[in-house]
Length: 357
Image 1 (tube, rainbow, N blue to C red):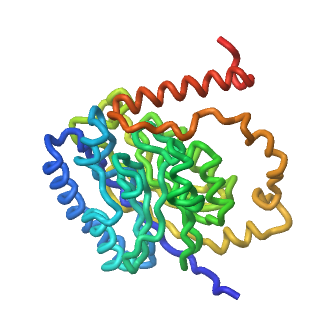
Image 2 (cartoon, rainbow, N blue to C red):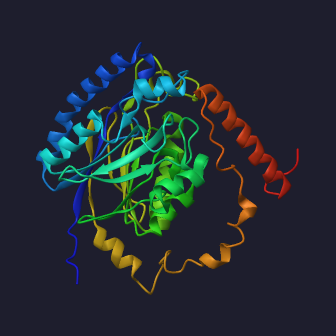
């Protein structure tokens, strides 16, 4: 019989996400990324010295924010990292030096998929080994596995869509940013055994309230912990793409704070405004396992009638078309995404999900 897992500490590195789009060259952008990483080591060291903190999570793309007008090639040269590149080596060195699990996110290139980039979350264990790589599914600013689903499954296999890392801390998964809004993404990880969802995020001020509800709901319905690390703000002259220039400075509202939720949806830790690692809380995986194993009471997993939904999740709900990726500039890529959304809307009208206009 396996030894019980003692409650362990998780912390969020709520740091500022700075736009690489304001950088004049790839060299300037790379130097800036290196400088940011050097500065953040003090946060990592502080967490390691706090005691009983075994895992540190960073927010979504804190080194670069999102592309603005760059082509795919320009963004790859300026802002994307490789899983075996120098930026990753820094995270791995931190994990090994401070004996922490470190979760983070970046725009990533993969050798198997040239001239493409992914929004990718990754987890490194205390030996410095990369143990989990999870690509964001719902994204308009990078390639999703859905956009080349057949090729992705052929090269990476089905386990790469919703990976779970089985560790001494329990079964850990990563769900990036607004992927948390689609309940299917988290549930897919849960049905593969995940007990703790690590959520690197970068929601802007307008999302603070609705995302608080989403995070709480995912924890309750999946009987899991959700460790959600948000950006502290958005530095530089170029805000994240697609939000009308919204920043904490011009709305008077801070971004959604980093929070940790237990499986009852209770907030057990929350960060104050600004760059810090003060969102720290205990994760009790044994409580997750006990409640998921209960034959009485509200066991949302054990009582799931999955067969009932077979027809609903058949071809009828094939909205956003798969396998449509084309190598192009990011402007064309976004335009193609709009066309695919229009195709999805048309299909929704045909089957009665939304009325015909």
